[in-house]
Length: 282
Image (cartoon, rainbow, N blue to C red; front, side, top):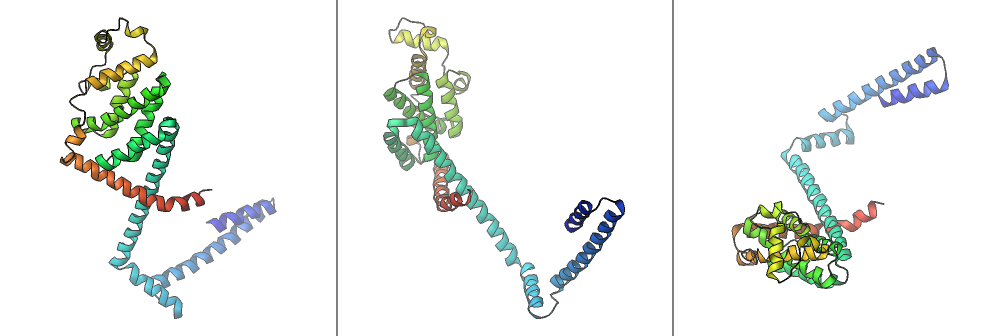
């Protein structure tokens, strides 16, 4: 229909009368009909393998290939490989974005935190981009509350480790454990209460008294409140600390480690194709 439409448009641009436009329409219709006949002949030769010479031989070969199970297998294989490559490129792209967040958030602690991330990956099978993103987010939150650099890094590191222990202990996803800890760190008590942790104002106030501080929670600065919530969280998490290391050979944790290894593999494959993608995208 495209030649037909194009011809009608050109006819309408050349003349202004209805009769001449109809003439252009009829001409285009004849051309389209002739093209259809030509296509039908080609299709017939494709199906039958006729046409003689090289042309017929090619279509005959294509017909045989198309009808074979090998052709279907090859097509499916190409599709699956394409999916793997696409997913791998997406994985390495996520890694690049996570590292950008990590480097900007950690600042002068980037090198030290980088060693921590590598250790989490090598010893506990943690996914490096995931660890980098989590510790970087905790660091950003701590700094936004006004917590000093050294203290902010210590909080971020310990809360990130605790997320993996929560995941192992409560048998929940890393993302779910991280979200609960992040919610508690910013003062949302319900997500932490769902796993038996109390970060209510009354509990925070009691902790202040236990430390010999005669002040109300409401009077504290944002940095002090965040620090207090962190202290209470860590004190209530004694049973969960190091649970991932203790139960590293449990089926659930071994599956987590296996998934992490697949992520590393996907990132490695994606890094092969990323330079080509970076060159093509502009």
